[in-house]
Image (tube, rainbow, N blue to C red; front, side, top):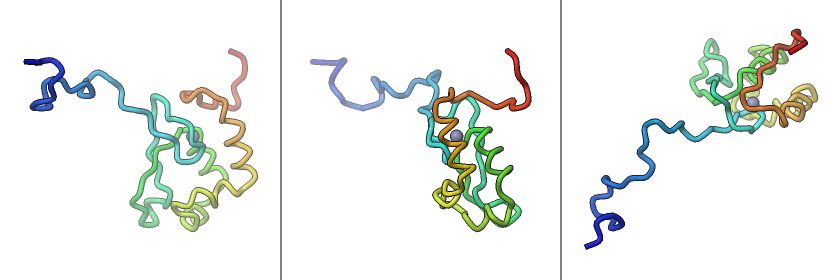
Length: 113
Ligand SMILES: [Zn+2]
């Protein structure tokens, strides 16, 4: 008569069905760090070019991509993030951002705290 630990119906004691809990962090498509409180759903292939897939990204990572690539370049790379990472500026950015907080956003031009 174990009523707590017996897995009978499977719904009564579900440990994972907590509604308040935040969903597990998804890794950023570009830098691989877990995303923070804000997830940007980025179209690797621009929507205007018929891209349908979206990938989770940090805002700052998406900004970096769009600052470094044109839509045509992004379209060509498509879902192959390695192509993008092969670009030195991107590589450098990813290495740099690797130690930042997931919620870190660059207010690049702002200094002071
Ligand atoms: Zn990222």
